[in-house]
Length: 470
Length: 142
Image (cartoon, rainbow over all chains, first blue to last red; front, side, top):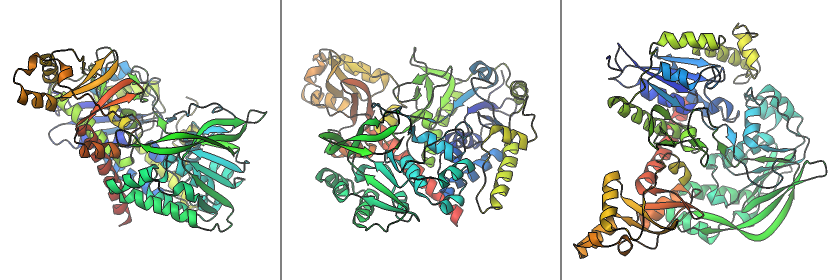
């Protein structure tokens, strides 16, 4: 038998998904000096990079520069990208088992968590993740319509996604027109009637997940005053003790910034972005037409739990906040894939350090792995996925060393290409994507934007000269 | 980062023992699975935690401990956590109060145990990730 991982028989790895964790894993695999590895990466979209393209805010271009590192990975001759090839539709689990020694699922977290309160599904109540995908031009979300004729909006949550949504709603047309926001969103937002955007945090300013630079940025918006309520950003005893004990300078700075906003006199700008802390929505209130009319908020106080974490509990006091549009941003959640064991509680694949676990035997499934948000849940920044992916790859290498890999009947790289060609003749290679990228950037340069995104799959395929009707 | 992100990548198997079990059984389970602690459960309720350290402490006083029951050696006042706990706060508590295993509960349901090693590793991953992201951006600017 040929040794797997040599020139005679390279280790063949399929990666499902092409976001940061997929690329970090591919990079770490291809870097192994004593091992010959071939990586094929599949994405259901024609475009790679997952949430770097579809999640990171359009006015945060610097964060997207991480794709330069991913482009270097893609240059490796042992790496191939198969875009517009969907797992579960174009390729089955059985197909992958027949062609690869190892399969890595890095499909991320695209859907949203629910608040679990009455009225959540009223008209004009949306997951923030859908709004993000819409303004970033994700083809599956471009058809959505948001009622931007409303004057008052609530964004539930104070994580980075919540802050992004609130900021995008407050940016001026000029500010947005310098970004790569999807054209349909740029146009819709230019007609926005929104005057007040509320950001609602369950706990206090010291516990909010957003980072200091993001809070600072809000104070510099051209067309929006940022407002905080002094009593809500004052440090309570529990938070003060926690900050002092932990010596967390970043959190202290964040609180100081918010306290500064609370002292600031509004300049009478077109919009107001209002921070509210220590409140939990308990109901989305509707009007007689079933549209959002407001949010019922329970006021909270903080306490230190047994484990030292600061938690909130209701004081019994409530408040009704009149708003006509609600975005819930209480976290992304992973979606299941056919034939991959799923952990409903966490919204992740069932895994141990990245090895997929069989739910019946509770033992690892040979040759199957996961990395990134679909492995651990949505947390951290883009770079957090690097140590996460490395941990998974280490498991993959350990298992290869002990011979615990799949035994594919077609372990040649031509064989899967032929199959993909049959199932999805319009598949997109990395060179195809680079061509799309050049077109997008060139279209952007004409109007002083980083790029103008394709948002329809048909348009992407047509630009590549593919037979769209196929 | 939250405790739930640590639990999501841990084995679904939670090793437990009853308070009436002989200590020899606890030692056998710890050794077999190469783990440091067992949660002591009675009627689906957590009543204690027994660690290597509890056993060493008891053995130092009474060399014949292996005949005794778990409940006489375990730590009965167990500090527990929740999935939504902040990683950093938990790390601080475990360090300051010098305990190494934290059972995680949802109401009364035991979801898993995180060790100080798990928490440190996740925290390290978060710091490394931030550093990497910042470096990428700085290189881009320079």
